[in-house]
Length: 123
Image 1 (cartoon, one colour):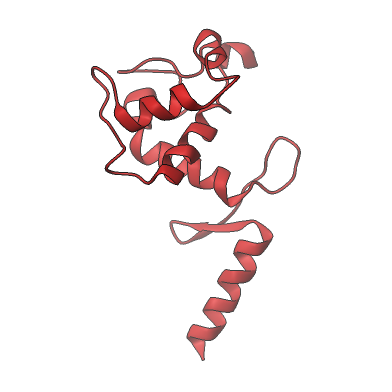
Image 2 (cartoon, rainbow, N blue to C red):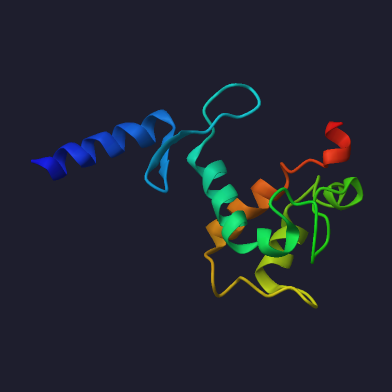
């Protein structure tokens, strides 16, 4: 009976935009004040787990290029193909994630990276 209650609560939480991360409840909010989609939250979590070590928590760089730079973001305005290709196949110094992550997960990361904004632009 406890399992059924847990499943019911989990389904309700997912349907309403509440996602459980690290055992706590989290309500994702986009800039519009509307609960973020599960896809956006997945992209953020996958980025943190696979990309933040080199590109930084907010994408502003570190050991790897700044993903928030206006020039770099401009490359991805028309299409995700370059960004998805880079994540999938890697480059010099960047590992390929095509065998580690699914195409849908890579797309989630690409979608998240496109939302990153430079701290300079926010100031």
